[in-house]
Length: 124
Ligand SMILES: [Ca+2]
Ligand SMILES: [Ca+2]
Image 1 (cartoon, rainbow, N blue to C red):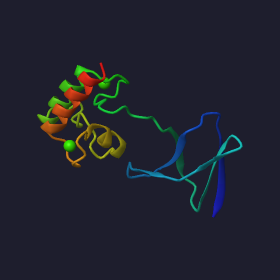
Image 2 (image 1 turned 90 degrees about the vertical axis):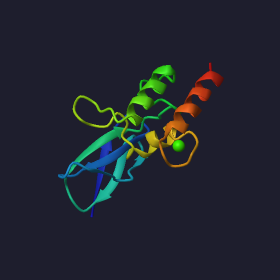
Image 3 (image 1 turned 120 degrees about the vertical axis):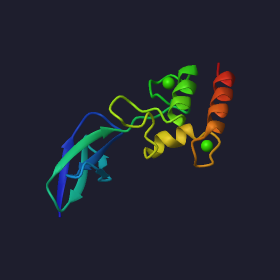
Image 4 (image 1 turned 180 degrees about the vertical axis):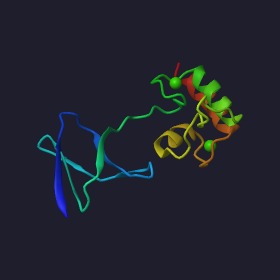
């Protein structure tokens, strides 16, 4: 095993191992003395990824929670796709999913749209 250090001034990042099959794995790097440090037994492509905090209900991830997110969630649940054919909301993105599953039943449904509308009214 080898220890790799990546110097960075930016805190709250993750070191992801970018695999050939297009998936990424968290290397569980520790941030110490201005470096991300992790051990590995293979040299490969690694990326420093900032761990963005997703706001509750921010379906379109523009940093604002408003009626546009209600519309976005409605379109997603109606099966609309991005122009490149990908889903509007990546439900495999757990942190995003958790922010949108407002009633915490581990499903994205019309009930979450209702909860989101209530949430927006309460917070405005
Ligand atoms: Ca938004
Ligand atoms: Ca739900």
